[in-house]
Image (cartoon, rainbow, N blue to C red; front, side):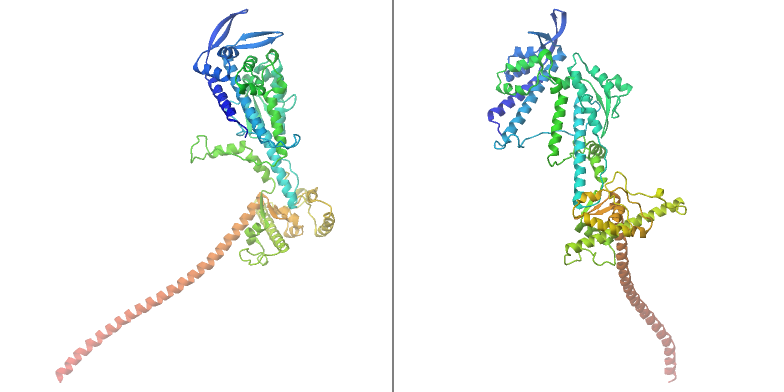
Length: 613
């Protein structure tokens, strides 16, 4: 991708230098100057400090002076002011961050140059690489400037995601030719305005305070309270004001932010002394990446309004959203099963928090506002054919059909099936409503009036908005609709001014047109798919389960009857055989007893006869 072995070696050398800078140690000292004694520090000559200076290509003394003194240019003179230990450590951290960030920008630009096509004009879209490394919505015990930047990104991407998902929903509804209407879903634009609004947003106020001389985090926080206190998404209690904190109501929940070091983090500038140090380096890579480093200018201040981290972050986020608008994005949501990073452990509470913070629950809510369940015609017919009219032999199980019906016949079968299911849903709802009214004792006193009309579709639903029509009106409407179809797009059919009132009787329901009956039941028949509302899907599944349950009971009744009759015949055969056996034994015993009686009479008689003879 365009990296030579020498460049790779130089990058590794720079990373080693940054790691050694992290081990540099400072010792506090007291120095005398024109104002008297002042706190200062010196950089210890350790193995890490010597290695860091050598790897950066500068002398040890120059590195020590750049990190322990602050150079301020006043007119034509440069004044060196000593830094204390804490300030020197922050200067070292700024040097590490600046060089590492410059190296990252260098790598990204190098990759973009290697994958770009030289034959493509510069004003056209070429190949590029963009990195968005973001975990998701963050809320910790202590939230700082980094968290508001990350949550600001999540707010913007969540808005983009909602619009993208909703646009896909509406495009499919128009493509399928079903009746729908635009809905309004909760928009987080007010949160984005609170953060990035020009002149009055949090980031704009932070940039303004970064330019003001001798401004502090406390002054910025008080200025923030005065400017944003009236915003409904912004809040700061008395306890929070004491600690210079505030809260923002994000889409995933409220988050409390602390304003410690916001000004310094927003400036994110390399001190002038460190910037001058990098100019004197003998390391070619550092000299090359110096153009990516933002450093302090005259009098130790830079053009913060155009170069601050907040302004740069907002600009990059705007570019990212613009790029997403012109592409077909694919969103990947990664979830951690647990915080301990151990296998076979699933924390449901942690998963729900991640789904909420990732905007998945909000996306599901937007999807459920319309027709979240949809089936192709073939799949719908194969799944719900059992709910069709038993007298209609055309709607049969696809398993039993050897031939394939034509397209018009298939559409007619699906339409009959949908019409039958819509009536079953209305009938089930109507019976449930009558039972509820009967339990409340309102059935006898219920009088239908215009003010008592029950509307079925709320303002948060992507549902049909066609009006209820009587049969004569249906014929006139169909004739008018037939004329308009030649020159009107399907999307125009979705616009109407009235909602659908729930019919009170089956005759009223059947007198409606097909689309109105489907809308009342919560389903729509598209060109290639059948769309189901969540309630309609639950009811259809319930009806299907009931149908299968009744069929299973009927099958069990028949099978058990056959088994019972078979068992009865077997038992009967066994009983007959047992009875014959008992009868044979008993008769044998009776014959034996009779034989004994006969023998008891014949033997004495024979003896007497023999004696006489």
